[in-house]
Picture (cartoon, rainbow, N blue to C red):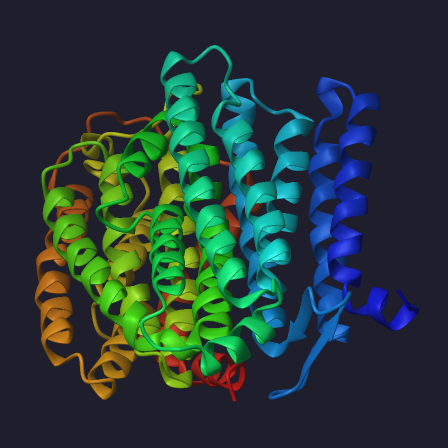
Length: 478
């Protein structure tokens, strides 16, 4: 191990060290001064962003380290930067709710930073071993966060379901990795890719290994029919934790799919393309149709997530640089949209009681016209209404799928997107055309309101000037 290799992993080393510092420092902070832990966590993310920017890899350049278990490339740096940005938003949004609910504790920040570290390790994984290490670090942190409210029976049930099904998914993925290792004799993704290019077609061991890999990825993403855990976890977890697991892990699971399928199993792309096509079709249909029947907005957004996973898979199954860039663009945009939507739920929550029913959004325009407008922009973007960034994200993945020859699936995506617009527009109707059930003013700290305003306006700004972010994603796969 030499200094240059340590420098390549400097962002990960920094986050790992500072997560421990945050955990230990919080022991010496009283409940009244817990804001210091919050500020320290934000500083950690800001410095991590500066480090990553200073070490940013040029387009087309890739460097491996630690015996080809770790890779630094432009794709990884871009997604890591968005990870910091999303987690900063999560911390700002969550502080308000955690204080109201009596859950404002240092463990939330330490576990969130460890979850971010797991995401970063997955993003830079160049070996099956590194992939699994990052996956488990993210998963174990997420299980603990879902059970953050120890007095909530619903939270404990959600955490148990998440733990059992998440462990099952990890086991399936690990078994697939062991089969791939048995067939190729290597854990390094580059060596696996080379071995697959020379392997005899129809190798049963490789075929079974690929199936288990795809099933494991589908479980983690929440794609149909492996989505059973997702609505219950979204519903049962405290809304601050739901905000986290609805956004940050999606970046890690995107990297998981790209590293395993695009980098490691590219020689078998025709096989995993067919599997992803089925998963995408089922996710698009079930996610959008079932979301219509939901009266709880957390469950509605959970099924909405399933439908958006279908769009992400649509980009991945194109198995081309344009498809991977489109899937990356979609995932980056989705994390921002999802974070903003859950932030509005926190905004409307009062006295630690979550505003999780659709009726809680009635008459929001009368109570707070500005934040009703922010929610409108977020809903329009999630629905894919033109000029908002969500429309261009859908456009990119559908165009990539058409170029790859998946015309029927692309038509299905358009039809289901139109169906999905109904439940997003229903919230807009409740905000603007229904009478409010309470006249209480909407209250939140200034930093919360500022970040939420930026988040909402970004949906329109990124749509009007989407070329820059699209070009950035394209450069990651140049």
